[in-house]
Amino acid sequence: MTAGTTAETAAVDEPRARRLRGLVRSGSGIAGLVLIAVPAVLAALSFLGLLPYDPVAQDPPARLLGPSGEHLLGTDQFGRDVFSRVAAGVAASALISVVAVAFAAVLGTAGGLVAGFYRGAADGVIGGVTNVLFAFPPLLLALSLVSVFDRNWFTVAVAIAIVYVPIFIRVTRGPVLSLREIEYVKAATSTGQSRGMIMLRHVLPNITSIIIVQVALSLSWAVLTEASLSFLGLGTPPPAPSLGSMIFEARTLVQIAPWTMIAPGVVVVLLVAGLNLLGDGLRDTFDPRNRGKR
Amino acid sequence: MRKIIHHRAARRGAGIAGTLSGVAVLVFVMLRAIPGDQITAGLGTEAAALSPAQRVALERYYGLDRPLVAQFFSWIGNVLTGNLGYSARAQRSVLDLTLHSLPVTLELAVLSIVLALLIGVPLGMLAASRPDAPRDAFGQLVSLAGLSIPAFLLATTLLSVLASSYGFNPNGQGFATLAENPGLNLQQMFLPALVLGFGIAAPIQRTTRTAVLEIRSDDFVRTARAKGVPPRRLQIRHVLGNALVPITTMTGLQFGYLLGGAVVVEQIFSVPGIGRQVLLGIQQKEYAVVQSTVLVIALAFVVVNLLTDALYRVIDPRVRAS
Image 1 (cartoon, chains in turn green, brown):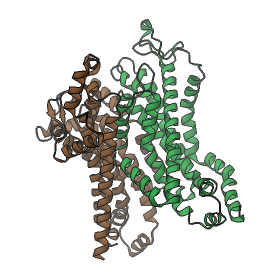
Image 2 (image 1 turned 135 degrees about the vertical axis):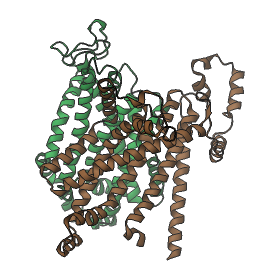
Image 3 (image 1 turned 90 degrees about the vertical axis):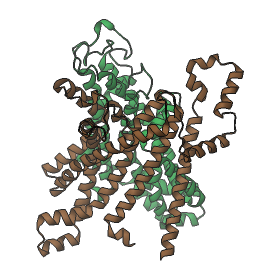
Image 4 (image 1 turned 120 degrees about the vertical axis):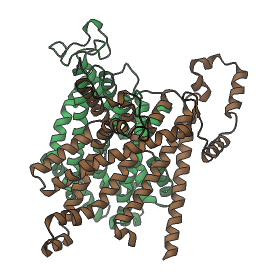
């Protein structure tokens, strides 16, 4: 490794701690983490199997009960515990969104790296695919894709992932294009390192901050998309609880049992707002030029 | 010079044609990837009762026995001659359905954008007028709400509260087009446009704020101020005038999203737009309807993006000159 690259890697590694402190200092980052805490705890309870009731177990005599000590957030029209359903719904939403965004980030970043670094035919093909996927309004593409698949949580995640792949390609390709012209990358090339190695060791670390910011913002969109799909009846099929379908079912109950709408509604807003603020905070932290703007 | 422009236009045209062909292939492949085929999808459980001979006959009838490439080109040929297929449920051609639903969605999109600009631009300018002051925090809070409150949640809440508490539910009766009954139509469009507009106001507010902050510190603004340009004129003519470029880009982008993204709101308020046409097609398993409608929307989306580019040239003389 040349001296230049060592210094550069150090420059990427060293401020990591400072960046974390920066996130802590940035108001929106902290606010985001605080907002996400509630849905995160709910999802954790569900993943750990610590819910007070089975989220799909019906108990007709106990239907539409208001919030009480027994049922913290009341019960729905089938006597199911709203607290447990909201928690299970957040867990499902988080699982789908995280899988979708992880898939999109890995595939999109790989695409952006290859397109920007190799240029030529690879760039042409990847650029073409990106343009085609961008020619669809996002929700419509997700909708058309889920209608094709046999629906379960994984296929919903895949559909959402396909929608967000081109975004990751686009945000990474530009920086990669300029990075490949930088001296230390050229130096590494001239010392005979393989292109794959250069991409992983010298180019990728320099675009991680862009990817991290994009991941946070994409997660908030993925949560919204998943909720919209399940509201339209195109998400994970019932009786599996999901925030969108809970709100859909609650729309006729809102007069007599407002908690059936308020509970999932508040949680989805907290989650999306939290992720948005976290994304803003991360962007401010990583890119000083953005500080104070948005 | 002219030659270069021609060359660039030709390259762009080729690029767009390539993208549209890709869109057509993707839409075709998506339909083919459906488990089973149009026959089993159309007949549902009755498909099991088909004899092998009946199946073969149906496959021949629908052209499913031909090679995929041939099927693709005959579909494209049909689309190009205006034959978008037939909806058995509606007993109408998809072209006819689309000619009714697309204008509805376009109207809804225009109204939403107007409301979004009315909310977003003043809010963005207000926020930028004193960064980090309470008014800035207020602007950011409103835009965060717009980004974070799902359209379906806002729509259902508005609808149920207004309908039950105030008896205001213009969408409860049959939908009236703008030509049939403008008064009723605008009443029916108001809430859906407000919900969509509130969501779109957020990115517009943010774009306005960022652009205004950036432009305000430019030299020409200081010069204008030194020259004694009145503050109001400075804000509107010099600062907002220049901020229009990024605002237009964002608005065009959002307008395009609305073509398919309005589906949830269209569904909730029973607005017979093009998004709802796709959704109904999916629910009724009328894949020909879905296929053609999705293609039409993608086409419209590409056209909107081109128009945004053209508008951009009108607004920004620098782009025109280069």
